[in-house]
Image (cartoon, rainbow over all chains, first blue to last red; front, top):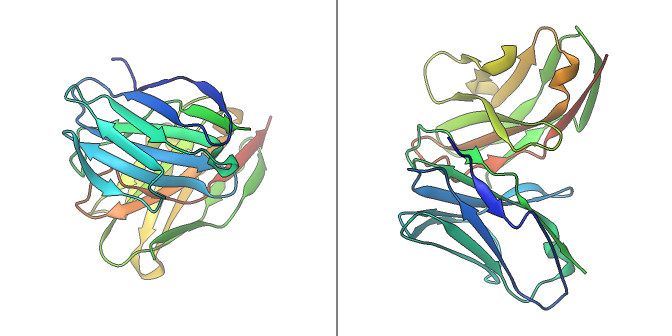
Length: 113
Length: 115
């Protein structure tokens, strides 16, 4: 079956701009989570959506937001980009129950210049 | 605050050597525990998980991990590594009964296996 698809794979943006990243989960998965991966901080949880509702949120500023559509696809938006937002953004999908595995996409590499 | 510590940043081994990667967590309450692996250029994959029951968990590719509740540890082991095990390994935790969508990760351990 098709895996988790993230688009675009690479992105270069300028400070102050905003960016939208997209994630298509595995068919049938209703939970989508987003993580930020940086060399210094490692993998940090951003938020989780389940059936179009935000279920959990990590400790990130309000510039980071997301949403989930009725087909479970999710988008993540970062406004007023800062240099420190440069990172690999990972999306994971699962059925949503605690005993099910989360599958990760290959990520979107965002570079802010 | 909830956190996961991985003791080694980079481990270098020769093929056939035994592997043990340390993981300690700080979390108030019962937890689920995971090890993920990221091979070069590939996405994160689940190696193994612990929810309850036998504290010795076996995963894919010959990996196993032992949950020691008194030590808040979940160390990953493999008796004999191969060159193909070269990857970055991440320990993760979440609340027991919680969604796997809300994981707290350690900072990872890079494993380099010399042929």
